[in-house]
Length: 154
Image (tube, rainbow, N blue to C red):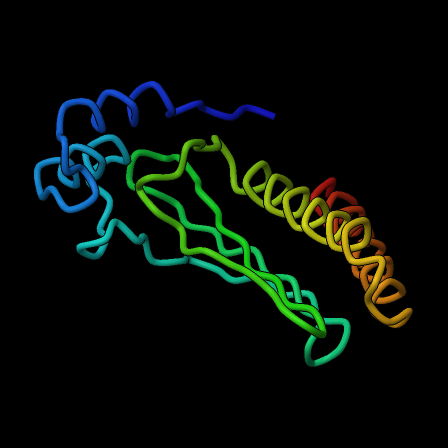
């Protein structure tokens, strides 16, 4: 996987602008870093695609991917489970860029798997169905990734 670590550039921008989170100049520098990518005033990039894997209505995993004008790809994930969930938007503040859509997708799925693995490990108090469904989501994510890899060989 070819990932590009942007944390040194982000750290430099944060140091340069004391109120970087609300600085228009910082936002412009970040947009330039991503090839003058269009984003909103918070730095959120529009998603080009949203891949969602659903086990049940309340058990979903989603990877959003965008392709920046400079050729880089970025992703963000969203997941839900019976008693909670989490997610974030794709942003010019992402610490990592990827050189291909496949790499971004695989990184997103790995992140989702880690989220469900943490859920499985840390919610031992939850009903058995929560534990079972977390394990089932991990299996579905693995299956999606293996199917995707097989399809991309041809």
